[in-house]
Length: 295
Image (tube, rainbow, N blue to C red; front, side, top):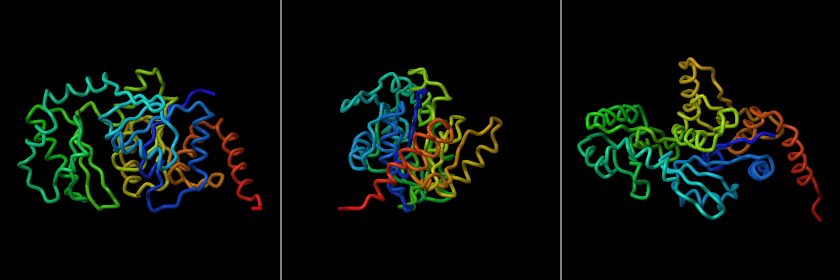
């Protein structure tokens, strides 16, 4: 079987921290899949390094080969407990900020008068990511365009990513160097590691995953994604000239409900049908354990 380069978001994609139910055996099954089926795993998250490390332990997630953290502004190679910053990535994206530091950019935006526009806590910032809270509706989206014009006027090439935190009903605005972001970091790794598009799958659920979900890479939208994200993804794809390779998990396969890790597995089975027999046999194994009488 060929190698699969699985790049997956964490919160509400592999981590079952949304309101929808999780298929009980989905995460153990994903662990087995990664261990035995030549899957090279990369976590692609808005979380920072420490929060990702905590999530791996707290949720029993498989160890990755790479981690793209902080919405694509930080990149690590992982070998057991050793996480090595990939410096060539950071050297590459730093050029877009023309020597500005994130505190310099924050100073430029001090004059922005917009309700709900405020810096997120310091732990959410890093050298190549400046993060704000905004209003959660259309005003938050409109603000993104205002910020873009201010940065452009000052010669700063930036990638602005706006998303919504449904649990807090807040907008989230991440300002990154223009060359940074989830898709760019994935493609950087693909080039460095000589990985093809046919070997690559991205899985996600939220607004800051939209670029990757609609990038032309094979992609999986888990079933528990909001209708807003689903609608936006479809709208973006319909306006593209290239054919879509987005798979939307349906939750009608082998007891997998399509939410979280179950949706990721369903998507992998869609793109790589040769996994189907292995997954079916594993699910029968878990079913037999459930049906074994207790002593």
